Image (cartoon, rainbow, N blue to C red):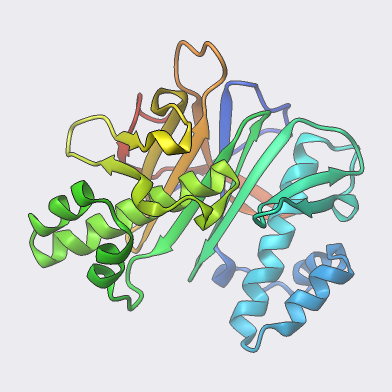
Length: 271
């Protein structure tokens, strides 16, 4: 649901996470799309051109504009086209210039929706999934989920199983992206507990050398067909969870507050 237009850019507070949602199917203005195309570097243009289907090229174009334009909101002195990106050994995108900054970001996209999460100085991962896409979800769960997650799935009816599968899948994707290791972390080495009316919990295999209490997780429904998840490492000696601001944006144009359904959270409801 749309909200009021927001004010001019403000610095990102250290205890705040901002989640930016873009809806590529709604973006058709030729002049705006030309501005998006002008922002891409040679590597991004090559990736864009390799997509076979026009829809995928369009979504990639919007995603790059979302990342570049949003980062420049926090640092207006850097034009969107000037941002430089690198990747860690597991492929996670990271900022590499042209200025030093503690901004950290993570991007996810699925059919009809793109999600960008931004925070200062800490690990962050986001994932968004189209729950109406065709997927053999129980086969995937049997292969990758923990025994506790599988027991939970098998206790549900078929409709409940499908919804819970996407709950677990988005949360798992968000966590491994936040850790920056991708599937180098086996998905059964950590296990979520999602219960109606209860805080969201995670158990982590000691082999992963990570502390569950150092994380804040949230599970969201931004649209009736999409499920999204956030994993963000809490500041050291944090006494309360981050404030999470959720926005709907047309990159390089406008943004508004976006009301979403909070399905579960490890801490307090979203701000």
